[in-house]
Image (cartoon, rainbow, N blue to C red):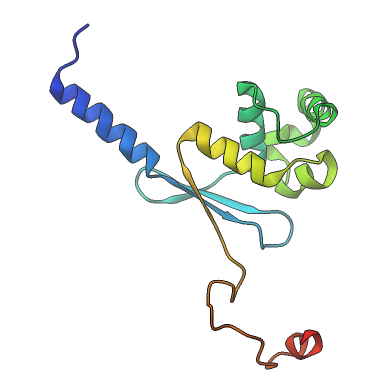
Length: 142
């Protein structure tokens, strides 16, 4: 099969567009991290950590948790505990299965050709930020 220049350009353009997708990661929220994947139209869609973990396990990339914990995750998923791992709350993986969240995000992002963008806690991105004592907790911890 011969590929024309036009087809090759289209393939390259699609691949570049795929690489431009962004995974927004906010691990500063309570009850587990918030993950949103930018779709090809620029819209954000929620993605669960369970989906990421399942895809990594299926691809054979399991270095994000100890082997015995991976075996437990697989077993609980086969038992359809709470409907399967794709339905588990994001914090379950870190709290109960010793999953390294950053490794999961980085491995999955490289596997899917997306760029993770990590949220920064309020004030950390502003070099001039300092506690002004305006809020009770600031004066308490200052």
